[in-house]
Image (cartoon, rainbow, N blue to C red):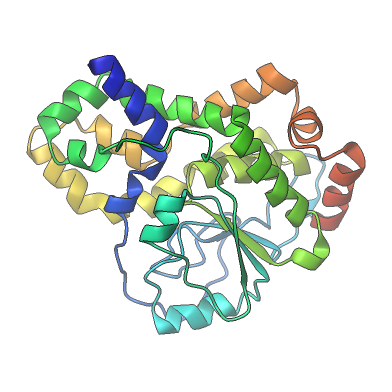
Length: 298
């Protein structure tokens, strides 16, 4: 029974955030000009970040204002929508499941195309993951998610981002669009903007030549913007006897998760360039075109 439960949790861990999200924050007044990789400061979209501004290993700068990563675009206030509109987005790429989209559909400025690319579509769709219920039952969570079990499930999910046919299809369509100047500015997101979005952002930065330390730093910044959303839930969970390591393992990000994706990519393809060419069908010429589109030499 335990193995069956763990299998279900592994297969459905990406949808558990439906019940945990939906928190509405007060609107902020302006979109700030942040450091590279940092939040744009729209309160109900805390993980909305410009992918530009980073330096590559050879000294180029990734252009700002072209590609954004984000958490889900839901429960956005009128004033925040005006701020979102200022980004001038043409396309919004939604990497979530059908259940996630139906529960909390994207809210977008007028004229923005909403494109659905379900990364995890090839996972079985019957049976609930019920991770929210586990977080509501700390003792059960300690048994089924403690002692590194939650971390192992997430590492499996990150390997799915590399190996699932639906993931390859979704990321191919995303990166083909991001390589087309006419499709920009664009935004891509999942539920909290940390896992499916986290791999997309890491692959994007790596292909453009960002150092691995930069890629990791950008990835880990999700903890700064997502974990505070769940402070009350985490405190309640721990106060009721839950292991403090469990909420951070499933609500945040860990370097070992991203490492699992890169390990899978290296095993299957050998390099980021081969991942794009062999896995996603984006050839060397198209990859070079992407670099020319985004990189600015000083």
